[in-house]
Figure 1 (cartoon, rainbow, N blue to C red):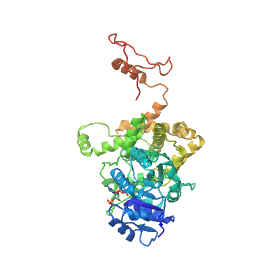
Figure 2: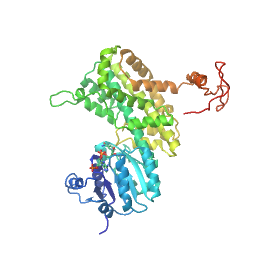
Figure 3: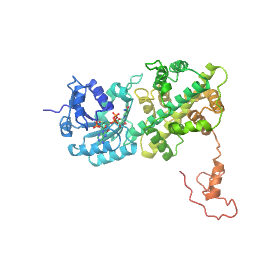
Figure 4: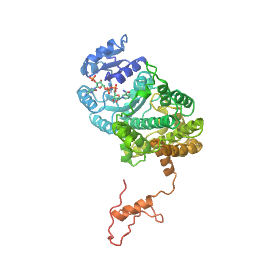
Length: 485
Ligand code: NBP
């Protein structure tokens, strides 16, 4: 019998099942397989019931036999060892030119390693970020594929068919770049998501503690914000969460313990920013804010001992709400500017030819950070594909000009009334640092040279020439090697 399967998908948990149904809706015959084989029949008799172009396989041999050549096999399993284990299980059954796709949340160094490993076996590999959760997988995720470039034409049609469509109809899936580029960009997406969520939480805290607003009032504020330039999925779900009541008519949000969880992609983004020497301060603060929240018991103890102001934002409430909205918007611009700075540096480090306009474009729909704002970022890169920093784009510069007074008022007032706003304030500090012609690093370099003979460059000499001063008269003339981190 002629093999019929266009693609196989391994991993029948929430993401895998929904992606299969999505592919099948678009006319593809999909072979389904899972480590625990009983889940194949559960799926065929459950969510896939009545679909004769979803084929179940009960062994890897059967799955491979059912596939057209070159074979395309997508893994939607837990990231880490499970992916390597499956690759080893698949290898004996595949031929040169076949393609393995890892659609899980793998760490990009693993994807670089796997691309090279499979290339050495004559196989193609794609590591793809997929965002949008269960709903996205079923009806249209944002898809960020990277890996062996020759693999892209094999799956382009399938991926672009199942991807979300942006408001202009463009599919939210484009080739990102070689080896780990797709998973890197997905990681950066998740880091930015951490930042967006933290900014919204700080706005909520200011409205709740600083202005004493009720959930209903905040629900209305977020509903209004969602109609304008902040319109986005995360603002929309915040609006809905604030209005959501349980069977007793009580707000669920008030009953949720204030200890944040995390799965690690924000941490990976921050580690990468440190490795690359990029000041991605807002995402880092967002990760640390989750860590601080998780120290719940310690905070409860400290709250009984440590003193500080617990005031209110005085003045007209509506004016404050608008100030907070503007502070959020300005901080968000800084966060995305930092995220794109990070991707630009990673592209240099790992030799990826990233298209930033295209990345903004495929995040416009399907994924968790989808927003009107990303359309603006796409337009900025359309205007200038070589834009070095989003903050320098005319549109975003204009927004910051418009929001700046509010932003400063919100951050300084939050400090005075004792409401923590780590993301709002780090964004403002970054903005002020980035626009400073001169920072106090001259003194810092002097300190380094004083205690460690680390040398410094001079304002009156060309870059790259290093000098050492014998600050105490006791040191020698030998300098340490000049190095940068
Ligand atoms: P899970 O991350 O919960 O993984 C479940 C699947 O992994 C099952 O098929 C399971 O097989 C398989 N698996 C595990 Br667990 N350990 C294995 C091992 N050692 N060897 C082989 N298979 C193993 O599923 P998911 O939530 O659908 O996510 C799939 C991937 O997509 C993950 O990488 C996730 O990070 C990523 N992702 C998830 C979301 C989301 O919203 N959930 C969004 C975007 C990306 P079994 O049935 O035999 O236990």
